[in-house]
Image (tube, rainbow, N blue to C red; front, side):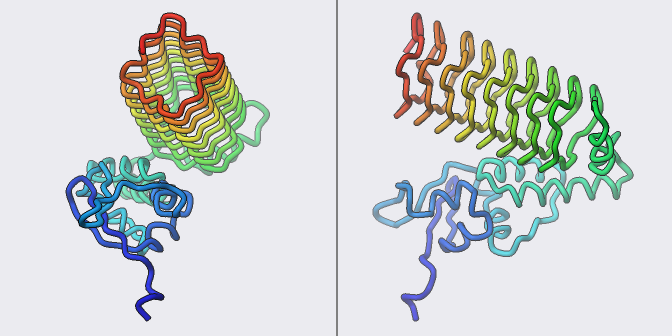
Length: 299
């Protein structure tokens, strides 16, 4: 019967029109942003006349996103196109898709005779020892998800596009690493040292960064949605275009941080140190600022 069919969803993604169902958007990746959008718990921006829901993203790649949600298929693309698609998968927080894209890229590297200095299997063997250091190594693109990497020293390593999702990394050292585009979704990063690290475009949604040191870190375009950043050290960090919606920054030190175009909707900034910070181009809708030090802050 028609009434038994899944509800139809009309999407306008960056000007390109798509038609799908609520089931497609919510079932394969239930923890994704798309699943949350169409869970019925949130108000969505819908065209009152034609019924399209507008999403301000690249429509060229959204067909691959839909095909993944429908069939679990990772498309065969050029490396440059995979990089663009990975960015979309990170935005929509499609962890299964991210893992699939990284697996496809790693297989291509293996087929081309390229290899990192260590593999996931090598690292699992290493972490069984008492003290582990991977200082300065090239570990780009490796899947290190769900591993116990607590207290490991990654300082100065190349960690681009590494998959750290749900890994235990508390007290790990990431000083001056290049971790651009890496995935730390739901990882434990308590008291980690990210001083001077390049985390541009990294996904840290849901990660626990309580008391982590991110001083002087490049956090441009990062996603910290729902992350735990209580008492984190963010002095002079660059948070330009950063998504901190719903993040807990209670007691965090943001002295001298750049927050241009940062999204802090619904964030907890109680007792945070925001002295002399320029907040003019920052979205603070619904943010909690009770007890925050805003002396000299520009709003």
